[in-house]
Image (tube, rainbow over all chains, first blue to last red):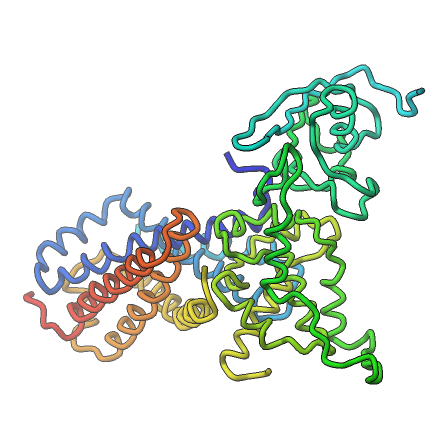
Length: 113
Length: 246
Length: 114
């Protein structure tokens, strides 16, 4: 499914960054709407927050935190590439970004359980 | 005429793109496999022994000119420098014209858009002096000269242009080769065309569209990295926007 | 199809959001312990100028950043361009700004009906 000319680490870094960005951009309006319920319908928001105690929702939240962290660290890698002197260790940075994001989202998940 | 490289007895199943005036398709050929065989050898065999109507380009056949660039199993390569044994799995090959360029016929593409973008990026030297002025003293250790030298070996083969997904998605994007050359000229202290050049590479199709996927660097046969050059252009244009530097 | 100005806006809002995002992740990891409720959230955020400024600037930055990011994706992957592309990008920016501002207001100075 992935075309041959794309099968390298830095292309995967790009696609992960982009997919994470899309997911976050789609999530945010929903997130903002739910929070504003604190004003208009706090009872509904409380009900929704109770719903987030479900394990499957916690897993989804883990995914969101991962995407946020990976998008941020990936973006930092990109800006370092663009604005700092070139380093040949691009792939290492890409891998570190994913690892850090995983670490943060796992911390969140453990706290949330 | 005797064969200098013996046939192995195996046959390659080769899918070659055919196109003339409109839609194209893949055509299959059975090509005798040899030791030390390049993809260019395969294409040449097909044209000489199987189908004389096949059109393709080559010139030096020794990895110097870049004319023989094609898509080999989905990756842009110089066919004279690609050994069959390195890329053929199960004796299968797929050979297509370079991606991102219009096809003239079969494996030959129209390189005009590639060179038009070269000019549009102002990747053209603008002299600041005449033959009557003294020579410009540029030492090899000068950092700008080193930056220019790192980017200068481009022979315009369009492999990076074919590899780039942004070129595929954005018809206005100037592309890695043109921007790489622009960067080498940004670092040429003899050049007088910097303002026009920075403007050209900051426009809608300019350097800021690069996502640093580095497919260009992965496939450049001269081991250049246009992403490094494009990052340099991003820095210089950002500085000039913020009023620092030139 | 980023030009220099869109690119700089994208990068600058990204930089602004680095500390904001780290802060938000830290807050989330802390706050999610022992469950969430409206009362818990409002107890911390209501009437707080600091949270208002923190999340207010986050909303402004992300509205610009996400809109520009989606603009590139809509162009590269869906081929949308010209006035339609600008309209959708601006629309997304204003949607995020509007909903985000409402959310920030709701948890800080709105005086919720609890």
